Image (cartoon, rainbow, N blue to C red):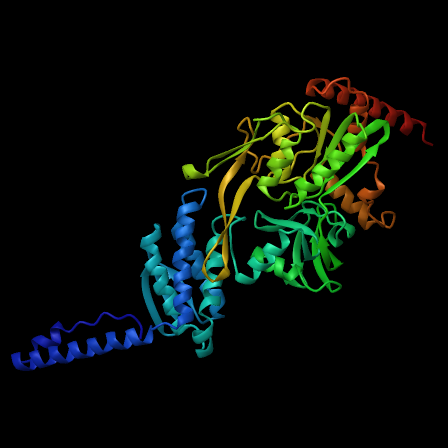
Length: 525
């Protein structure tokens, strides 16, 4: 029944008083029956009651913990989009009216609700929208059993409207997430994010299918097994990329240096991340490569550092290139190994005072006063940027490479009823000197390594790749690691652990390397 305004006054005025009273009674009875009928129609199943309880809990957590004042009106409208998508083509729609009003439509039925911009004001309206959608937009089976799944779709859209990193985590995805954080899981081994609404590679994890296939930071994933990633929730992306070990997954990849997207086929494997690798380079220089910050990273680092110290290395290169990050606590503990006791490592700041937290080192690190060089690039993100930023601000290490990714927001995983969770941005990271990491990144003290291509260079590269003379793109593995070579040269000649001395040594070494390259190119036929 569509919304109608029915006027009875003219009809009643034309009747005798007795008839008018009888007619009035009849109308009241009809209206009472309609109300009773509506209450019966909108009675909820236990599944739908659980969905509404989950809605209230999630919105309360957003109100309590989100980093900024949430735009609840935007969230509720996004939730309606989720309901619309879940209901199916043509089953449910809505139209925004003046002010806070929204007109819901399902077939020939309509309902006007108000979605105010505060938590409580709009929540009742959205609950009514959910009830309306469940009653009128789905088939009988969906009404009985699909209440939670429909709410999952709505909450997914609502949380995504906050920022690219906040999301609703379904029970299945939450179980997978807990497995991943142990450092061992099935998949292709790539860390991803949404940047400008595009699915972007932060970094492939070393020694995984994605790394061996040559995926790079800032590659765009356009499709997974033919399914477009446009508007695809990150939880769905993760689910599609994972699967039984040995089975393949096709990723459509776009790269700025490619003339057109390419399909890359990856064979899934059990991803067991060994996050710390070490060796002693020439001239007694220790080399530490950190590929991630998971639950075992600090223990692995302690073993590696102990080995280097026993071998009496003169200096250490800490390589954080293409390290996509991980746990905040691990980044603090890794930093502690290179800092004096009580040093500020990082602090977080959010909307609530409780989200402003300072993290300091506990105890003097085993390598707190010896020469240290840290390598970063555009694939260094999150926890990597915390470590690099702290060591840079405190004049503890020379940072060499290229500007880091700039992922400096704090996401908390907050469990909810029904074994689900919400991932919420609760704060942002700041370096000891108060520099914001998010979308800024860490600028190295000495720039080295490949520069990002300019638009002109991209056009030239694409022309080359289309010509018959340019058949295959050179891989990083075949290139000389000039950044690591520069770091080793700096530490080989280091007379002091002071950053200024290391910086001067790096600049001298760069000039010599460029002169040698110039001579070599001149001598070439």
